[in-house]
Amino acid sequence: MLPLEKIKSGFVALIGRPNVGKSTLLNALLNTKISIVSSVPQTTRYAIRGILNLSNAQIVFVDSPGIHSYKDNLAQYLNIIATRVLEDVEIVIYIVDVTRNPGYEEELIVKKLISLNTKIIMALNKIDKNKKFLNDYISLWNKEEQKILDNGSTKKLLYYIPISAKTGYNLDKLIEAIEENLPWGTPFYSKDTLTDFPLKFRIADIIREKLFLKLKKELPHSLAVEVIDIEDKNRCVYIEAYIYVNRTSQKQIIIGKKGSFIRDVGIASREEIEEMFHKKVYLHLQVKVIRGWQKKIRILKELGYQTI
Image (cartoon, rainbow, N blue to C red; front, side, top):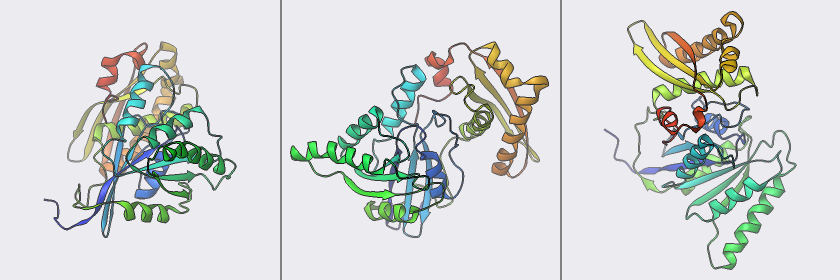
């Protein structure tokens, strides 16, 4: 049973374009790995909740897929998930990559956020690399926000906070700003809960990450992973998973010469999964061809991409 004492508590959404560092930031804030990290766009395909318990606060972070303008069904689902994340949250952390020039997608995100009745903090990420476009993001926000201020609306942005999710720079200030603006209430989760992300999706995400890291940009959006079975026995966890691709040629790439590629992916995945279970893991991976799976709504639903 959850404690009844009053603390600062609430949901905080992490929103931004692909590859701005949302998953890296979530993992850094929680000081553990919850969301997979890769340079490949669309790495995060779910809304992933991570719970940070402080002495007088519980912050429920909600990571989301990057918002983009691609048109296939998978991309549309990712945009739907990212938009739903904005519902019923107390604060939005709007993350931008100050090493990249703001573009059309950035304008769309700013206009969407300004239309919300939600507190917003802009996290100016990757300042450990350079600050080339930092002022451009601030100017873009000010320009769009001034339009609603002229119409009598109230200011939505609380702070601009330069951060580095990679090095940890200013993350303490970001947490302080979040805690300051959360309402008083009761905790949503017990203090030992780190995430409510379903186990089979966490395992599938680990496998996908290892695939993305090894494939680089060879098959960026052409594969998916579904965990079919998990059997947790006394001394070992038995896991069966399918890797879905679009074409037979892609299947051959995933398998590799004499099975070397999929074997390496299995070894790397198993090592991380064993850290989750604290016991030996037997991981059986199979590669299956489903042509155009990104456009098949039934397949997307089975893979869980339509939910948050």
